[in-house]
Amino acid sequence: MLNSFVEHPEIRERFAELHPPLTAQAAVVESNRCLNCFDAPCMVACPTHIDVPGFIKRIASGNLRGSGRKILEANVLAGSCSRVCPVEVLCEGACVMHRYDRPPIQIAQLQRHAMDAFHHSGEPLISVPAPQINLRVACIGSGPASLACAAELRRHGAQVTIFERRALPGGLNTYGVAEYKLPTADSLREVALIRQTGVEFRLSAAIESAADLAVIESQFDYIFLGVGLGAMQKLGIEGEEAIESGETTGVLNALQLIAAYKTGHLMRMRGAVVVIGAGNTAIDAAVAARRLGADPVTMLYRRGPGDVSAFDFELAHARHEGVQFIWNSLPVAIRSLKGKGLQLEIQSVHLVDGKFEPAAGSQHSISCQTVIPAIGQSPLIEMLQDYAAVKMQNGRVVVDLDTCETSNPRIYAGGDCANGGREVVDAVADGKRAALGILKAHCAAKESLHD
Ligand code: SF4
Image 1 (spheres, rainbow, N blue to C red):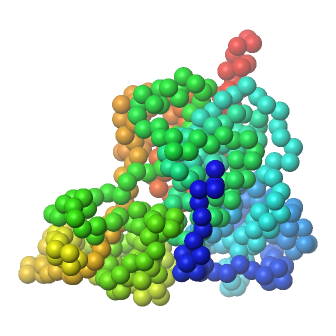
Image 2 (image 1 turned 90 degrees about the vertical axis):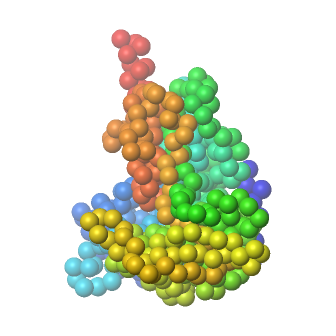
Image 3 (image 1 turned 180 degrees about the vertical axis):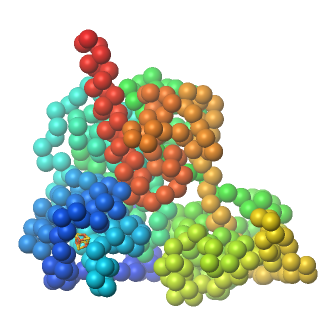
């Protein structure tokens, strides 16, 4: 399954990690700082409720194996989460050390230390498999929500098949997270661990229509929808379509860019690049363009620096990498310079009664080689539009918040298609919740048969 991916040394080198891992000695020293709080706020702040003091205590006592197992009890994607979670606003943000004006415990780095050791040990995820139960579940999509759902169901003995439209499993973790945060190879090793538990993966197997979904529904007892979000939204400006599909390949959206370099299909960029948008994905794309050789790289945003949706530390990181910014401006048109790159027309704007009004006489153009739209993703819901049994609202699947059950009692959903684009750890929490919801419904159905 994973043989089709070959890690490219040049990409690994160019996208060297931002934060190198802790040494064994540093991990012990750091773990001994933890106060082992009784009502640990770090644990409450984690959407998957990892027993933070429990795993840190094990690192301090030299029990790395026990630490890894403690973490995996709560979160099978804990390795990824230790790299990509915005811990400043989750566990580390809640650490009591802040109250004493001391730096928070480096929970993410300690978690990574334990998970790296676990992965290197070659130990399986489940040492004692649960007895098989007569329950077949199909997970659509192989991103964090589906992986967490599948792992939890396997832990209880269900038979699980994951359907993935792309060639590699892992969804966002494999294709969409900046390589210097989470290398593709590390995402795949986590998937491999879940696969070893007996989860079946069907790759390059797209389930894209209501008819496909109906076939799956006829073959499985329950379906979990973990389809994530869809394609990047279009800018909707003159020239975008023509250039995208025409002789110039100068418009490439942020997700296409990230997936292309992570899989070794894009090794270099040259000339000027303009990224449209200022969210976390836009920043990942801008930093990627810089590291691939583009110069200058400019982010264009319709509001000011205080209004960006990206985290502050992401914005600071982009600045540190040499990314430049044009604030309070919108793209108006893209024109091809006939083999000599692109001309991006832009317009300064200001907000009047909630609407962006152009500033008179402010229109001008920037020459560049590539324009990268990064203005958010649309929900991947085409197949559900015609599937009346699943209720949708504002482009998202409506689910019960406790069980992730949809309006169709045999279909559950979680992750971005239901919660609209939160963190990887939220998707993992959804997947677990859905698995427990499915198991509960399965037991209830069995009991009613015996009544
Ligand atoms: Fe340790 Fe901080 Fe969590 Fe307390 S809040 S248990 S000090 S990591």
